[in-house]
Length: 442
Image (cartoon, rainbow, N blue to C red; front, top):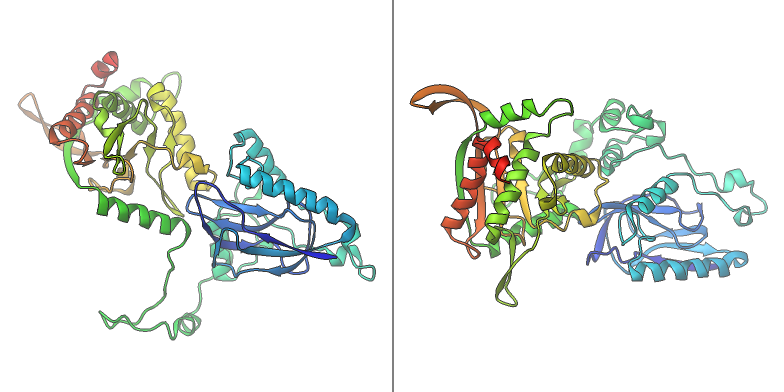
């Protein structure tokens, strides 16, 4: 037997660390090549890390919730001599693929196509076969290699909640599709810490120096939360931003949507607005650009990847509709629904979160009218859309009830002045107020 140390591989996208969400194995377990051993969260996504070795786990490096640097030990595996050569070859292939950035290393990373990733994801969910050669001669195979079955759990948030509430997921029956365990399932089984236990847990966390209040708990900035904080902080520190807004009558747009609902389902309001935003960006390309401070120039893009701010359990994500300028309303609607669903259920791909050139933020779903949003650095503008409400409105000198929405544009003053920003915002607003005329000209 020989021990092999598997280090956390390069996760791509320039990432240098990951948060260890959950161990999928324990010391003494026998694993096969490519069997998932840990679930980690990076600034981009949550992924399961497969083992490049076949053998018995002798050590787990790190505790759940800790941060692991790329290149640092993750697990130690005792590899049997009989399969050592095979394992070494597999490990060499694993490392070679990982360094080359192929799509065969980590689920959700690399350059493999989507179908390959889906096949890989389906495969990894099956229990890994346990090799008989690795069991002790004196121990029955079923005892030596028994691993509790893993119930289907899609969201890392659900697994985290289960750990916090002391819920064994192998005992929970999922109410979701295919037996998927949901957050509600865990909440029905588990219960929060008692007052006494909670107090005991937080004793010694200290007192806040400014307010004098006792500190109830400390939440570390890790993974996605840290990445969001860094991006927003950089945006506010680097970009001289300005905000402009306008109230828009969306009554005719709502009526147009009703007429488009036959025979096919009508596109969503967000998709309709997105089509006008894309058209506006082609007329005002300054807002679809980047500021390159190193080269002291502004880079204008030939094409639009439309980012969509999506609130999820893991935090704020911005998946992008690639080549949005090539899509009509229905095409945009399909992609918007796919991406926002993927963002919320944790299946969005990392490369879909890093390619936007302009962001559309529908904060109206949160029940608010307006917001001075923060630009998604390194973009130069973000358009926000509030909730649609009925308000008195003057039409042909008569006060009538109309459906009104507020649009707000936050832009980088380095790339343009108020005239350009106002021109873009007015173009989108005019298209929303007279959508049939606008569509005839697009």
